[in-house]
Length: 390
Image 1: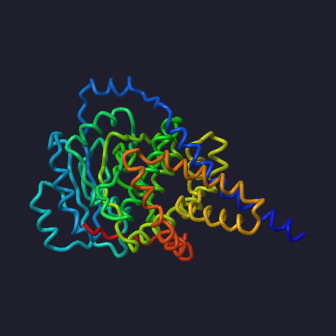
Image 2 (image 1 turned 60 degrees about the vertical axis):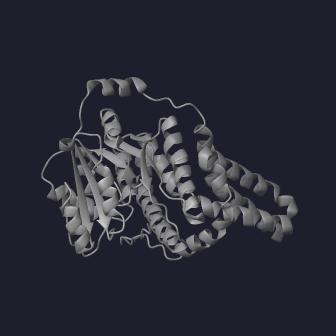
Image 3 (image 1 turned 180 degrees about the vertical axis):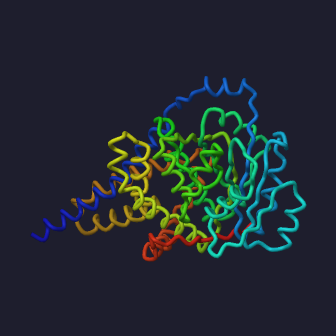
């Protein structure tokens, strides 16, 4: 009897974990196929020479270390200066930082929020800037882009109402930063590139995002949590707005380089994931009835076990079962091998081997993530700030 109970537990746990592994493996394979892109429409848009008017939003909470560098780089755009407006929403930044920003050709907004959040900063900007625009770009305070950034976006904006650019690492100064950068690229492969190749919407990532201005204005005031990107994504998918991933338009983002910041960042992400899952589940029946496949897929994503936890969990279980009940261990090792191969494929070739060489850093990071699980409050909407170190 005891062996039957143990076997049921073993199979149940394996099936639960297999669901997350299968999702990752499926989209890792899809990413290898040639992308079917509407190149005719994009080429036609390029020939029209239509010039989009952009509003660039930099929500900046206590970002004195990085905001000036990011804004100065952005102002080097090869796009007409009268067709884009850079707005920095300076929240709890030093007076000397604000004084310097006022010398630049930008709009500086200085709200005083009782409880700060990125959503509130964006809402404030839309209310305070009276001009109308064609598109809105949202960037983090540490994001750096190339001079051709807006010129590239201008072409895609004629075809798509929502675009997620390719956010990638601008630093790899230690093991944590390398792994964080690799994790970002895996997300780009699985949740963005592979999804578009199947005709599904890309996931949003919080920065490097571009939206039709009226679409953004309509939805930004419905955001209320610290996971504003997941909220925005769910709103767009429920409205059946397709999100395009633009792998050739790079946004360079600072990766966390110490374990404390890693834990803070993952705490924010895990809280947002739980909040998004709980918010989306009641809408699933309606989404299924109306064939909103993208919304259903997004809800499934929120239910997945985080990959780093999957790696450590599968490795630990495989070893434990091998030592205690070896006749049950084969399926665990096969599942671990599938996950490892899928992640290997999902990481770009140029950083693949460097990333896998840092694998022994993962257990310590996972322990910090597991501590976060005990403190997740799905009703908490407080903003968790991750400090920048460069």
